[in-house]
Length: 301
Ligand code: ATP
Image (tube, rainbow, N blue to C red):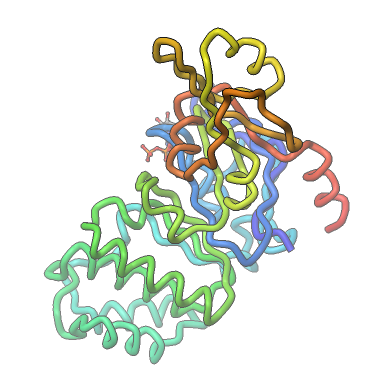
């Protein structure tokens, strides 16, 4: 099952495309990192997934073909927005009551157990919790609905490294226990490899790269060699990004099939950090599954 599937999805605001031609098929069971520079369209895509934004073009479904934002989807998808929508003046206990009244599937015991494990006092006013505790509370409220898909818009943005680690630890242990799928947007590229196993990279409203992180890393190399041979070597590769320093040239390249490199050239494996940065620096480069892969998924649902 694909937890998100979109075809030609576009959102335009007064004639300007915030999201354009977005064709995706994200399989279930992954922790998906959605990455891109400011204004790339990440929030817009997430809002389409949870039904907060209606598309101008194309289509989007969740959880195996359910219309995004439909009542069935809303029951099974949980969303934590960038500014966690908490009532700051009331206590954590009252916040749990509000959430229980709004959601018939709300598992209050689960939420209270999670908050107790995190030493978050139920009698404290929400506004007096630290940023990390507020993020944990928003996450506990979302997880207590037992969603099949959890969508988090920059859950880590305002948190210190320890709090980031703790929030993602909760997400990862819930994935291990309950097998839900997670999509979260983030700017913290250096921490993605530890938490995510699937990547969507966006640039200027378009999806630039998508796939399982292990596959993407296996399909790219960092290649260094003499600048005077660089042009002929580049002809045999899909070069994402190149850097020349005197007589040495370095490429980040995509390999669609195994290949032998000429003598004098060194091929090294690439880190996720390097891969993401290379694509962010080369917005016109793309690493997408062929159109057939998505077409097959659509036909099969
Ligand atoms: P950031 O990382 O800064 O949060 P983002 O990748 O989430 O950015 P979006 O918030 O999706 O990007 O915005 C994509 C583009 O759409 C931006 O150019 C933004 O200014 C524009 N945009 C988003 N929402 C609206 C809106 N309601 N009205 C007009 N333009 C909008």
